[in-house]
Image 1 (cartoon, rainbow, N blue to C red):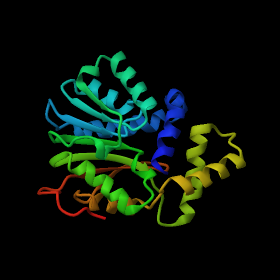
Image 2 (image 1 turned 90 degrees about the vertical axis):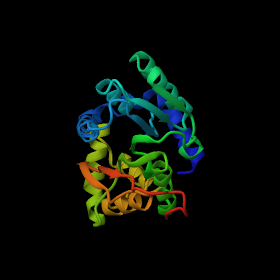
Image 3 (image 1 turned 180 degrees about the vertical axis):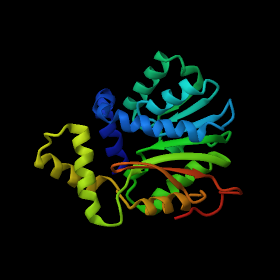
Image 4 (image 1 turned 135 degrees about the horizontal axis):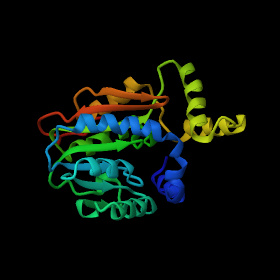
Length: 241
């Protein structure tokens, strides 16, 4: 998707976004439970970068469980970020958050973070080299050895795997009565706007962005998640592609 389209799409969805994804809460809960376990050894006062934070669901979850952590919330959609700010204020965690209405590369690098979350974001970058550059922008904002927990939609190398997973994914979101037309519309939109690649390919794109080989730690339907560790040494040389 073009950047202006991304912003416009999520601006329109901001008020209803959490309601739209309510049916997915068991999947999200399983993902967050594992993220909590994987990040549990971070320092008590860890700095966590939340890229494409949206309405702030993962930020709020982690803030409740790790009361010493501080968060850098990055989101290009102003409307989504406003919902995130409101959530943080309601939950009493706004003082632990810094908010940036921007794409990641516009955010100053500053003091390195201990970890990054990036959920359902990189899939909207259709060009693989640009997608690796995006992960490099994350890597340069992490300390060496810092953690990245990321998720994206992905499907197996066999193209026949995609169809049943897509139908199941849409059924969970919209209910069992989803029409054939709706499935066809979603299929066309995913083909046009979302880079649904094989999981191994996504892992290689992350690795090319400055990370050790990622470990896939979660899958639910099309949703896959990886744990990655920033490589030691400088990342200031030529961009990976």
